[in-house]
Amino acid sequence: MYDFDSILGEEQLKLKMKAVANNGKHSHAYLIVGEKRSGKTTLSNCFAKALQCESEGNKPCGQCLSCLQMDAGNHPDVIHLEHAKEETIGIDDIREGLNDDVVIKPYRSDKKVYIIDDAQNMTIKAQNALLKTIEEPPSYAVIIMNATSAEALLPTILSRVVLLPVKPVPDAVIKRYLMRNKEVPDYRADVCVAFARGNLGRAVDLVSDAEFDESKEKAVTLLKEIADRDYGDLYVKAVELGKDKKGAELTGLMDFIRIWYRDALVYKTTGRESGLIFREEIQYIKKVSKLIAYEGFGEIFDALKKAQLMLRSNVNPETVADLLLIAVRDCEKES
Ligand SMILES: [Zn+2]
Image 1 (cartoon, helix red, strand yellow):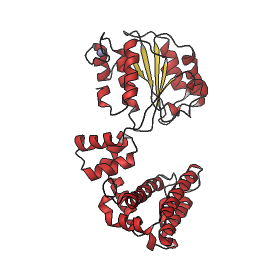
Image 2 (cartoon, helix red, strand yellow):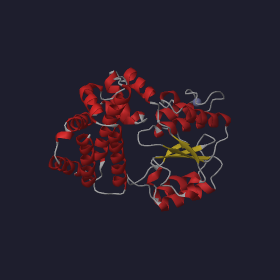
Image 3 (tube, helix red, strand yellow):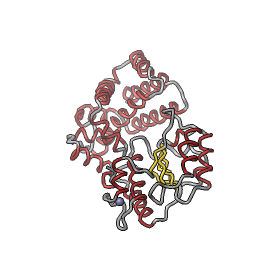
Image 4 (cartoon, protein in one colour):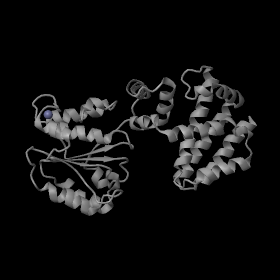
């Protein structure tokens, strides 16, 4: 069932979508932009449901035939674009699924809504094909695209869509949801929220992700004893991290490093334990907060930034990991 109320946060976006549906003045193309698992699919389906709702009152009513068909996943005038290959949307997908289909009038509604998930995966040729429809759409057509970033789309497309950016959900809202709806204990909820960075879907995934727990244990073990490790040890660790050529493993570790030292810095500044993410490891956090001077923290955060830039510039993860671990170790050692 598609229900705006089931979506946490995104109040402005939801209001805007409802207003468009209720005043009947819709554009022909929308682009919902947000990272993976940020709720774009649910938002686009709720939007389509509201646009198609037959009620005179507050749309979507959830009771008319159109709303029921939408919830059952068989609305004849809401089309989810299919594509032959999983990772790309090609020119034929757009031609067959959209351009050839859009000329056929709606089945029973006065609108025909198309939803294109993962629009960032459209090839340039596919985007040019799509442009034909977006430039001169039939009056009844509405195209809703979801994408993880707008950068992958041609400027000619972007200039013809209404951009609907998904905003990060506030940490407190995610935490309350995890504790109430998923029965996650306080400490664990804080850890998941810290790593989800405003993405509710990711937070929910982390709650039951055994791999995440394992990575956390490994990271904590490494950070507790990093000052005692020599360069050889750290190189072995870097080689291990470098096995994941895409750098996801290292990126995960970098999140733990960032939050570990952020906790230590917060403790150094405030002397308070509340609000710390790694409060189960408070003895170590206290130790680190005393050991490292303020400049040292600055150096660690700089090293993290540098590592992120290098990964983005495709430097291999093993090299990045080695440089980062040495920098962090030296900060603790020299303090
Ligand atoms: Zn309805």
